[in-house]
Amino acid sequence: MNEQRKEELLTRWLDDALTDEEVREFEPVLAEHPEWRAERESYRKLRSELVATIPAEVEPPYPDFFNVHLQRLVENASRRDRDPSRSTLGLGRLWTWWLAPAAAAAVVAAFILGMNSAPMQPPGVVDAQGSEVYSPLSNVSTEVIQHDEALGATLIVVEGLDELSDDDLVVGDGSLGGQHGYYVVTHGEVY
Amino acid sequence: MNLFRQLASNPVKGPVPGDAAGGGSGGRATNSPPTDRELVRRSQGGDYAAFDALVTKHRGRVYAMIQNMVKNEADSWDLAQEVFVKVWKALPKFESRARFSTWMYRITHNVVYDWMRKRKIESAGEWDDNILDEQAIAAGAVVTPSRSLRPDEALTQGELRERIESALEKLSPEHREAILLREVQGLEYKEIAEVMDCSIGTVMSRLFYARKKLQSLLTKNS
Amino acid sequence: MPQRRVLLLALLSGVFLLGAEISPAQDPGLDKIGKVRTELIFATNQGVADLGAGVKPLSKAEQKRLRASKIGAYSNFVKLGSVEQDVLAGYKSWAAPIANNEAILVTFQPQARINKKLRLDIELWQKKKMVLRWDPFFEVGKKIYLKGPKWRDGNLIITVELVSLKESKK
Image (cartoon, rainbow over all chains, first blue to last red; front, side, top):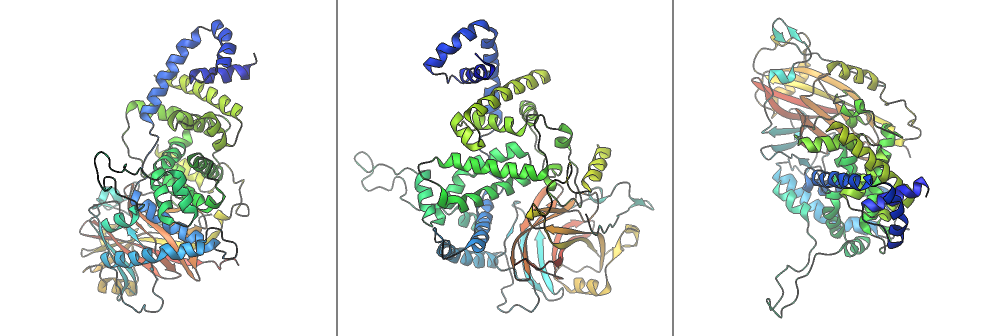
């Protein structure tokens, strides 16, 4: 019996997956290696530890947002790929079909998040149409101000984040005159 | 955020169990949840709610598989998203007689290996533990920073899990994947061959050597 | 460990791990489509002179705008850190406005492009945890301000700005 065949039968034997014919083929080889039985038991113990510690299913972090965000990606992908002349799924129709409730939901969500719902956007303001804010932290709240008049820009106010300490922001050994120093680095071109 | 939960859960509409007229003995049987085949068929017909239900049903397995290969939460999340976008796009080509979960694992395999190839962490043998252990923040390192960037890794793990995960990380991607698909995900050899796009013989060989290596590593470290 | 970190940073400064065999020509995800600047500002009512020489004041105009904004009643604003990075078509970037400091990190990844606007998936990370995710549209030259965590007696403000955007290929 060649090595490759032996390895295959050993693997199947370990998994109790030998056919009757394979059992007959393997038994003489097994008889020459009685130590294999102990090794099989050892691996089976390891396998049960592996199965007990490595989960087969793990919900991704922020599972609700996972689906919502995916929907956005699918929307973008459908928009890019849409070709009404050859679409077999009717993606154009599909996109329109589920977009309506999603768009309506985005408006409601925007209201709840306190977005500025001025009907006319001043020129040059970033358009946050349909954009979503999400925090996995239950104590964090956000307010999006589409156009802060004074800043002339979009401002998002986040409340509830942990306060930072001086130790968090110190850089290396930065210390000037007994105070912490902060190095400002403008990296410019990275490559 | 409750609104997002409501919107995102988007359950597939169907009869509520126990709602059947007559109830009790002699009443209608409770409807079981839709099968993958049914959800796929409806998704292929343009029912996004059915696709959303497929995602909810399978995202745990996809994410677990990716994270066990990639070992980084942030990247795993993004890669899992990529898997389902590809699933969505490839649905017209999916033949319903095939098993959806195997097909989905195949796409997951491709996404993970594309990611690895781009990150240039290809190895015919053992991984370089130095790269895996690095937790540096590569400030300004724009390209695929996550393997060396693990700011979210703060989980406490049992000693056994650490030893096993450490041993798994020392396997090559192919050996690790074979072990995970067989021992953790419970796939048959033929399914593993489909997922990894190789022959059954290759699957057997990979399993054989992966198991030997794992045993050797864990015996050495115990 | 710090020395290994420096070594890794040095290795990664060339961007491609273990040698770049895949060029932008082969991987369209590596196309640079623009630049983003991320800054960290400190808003306070206390004096700023003792913060250290590395801290830079903001322009008078920006300070005036910030004072009048809904950020809150602060009198002084200084820049603690700033970093400018390329936006790659298919990859997520991590920005650390204060070099070598993980307290505040910002990630960005392009999602969609409509005319001259670019939708970026933005994440704010605070001390190794993702605290916020947002996907606004950006226009060149327009900053987005994010009033973040408290520090000392004031607030940190994170700004993200699309500095440039390449013409899209047709």
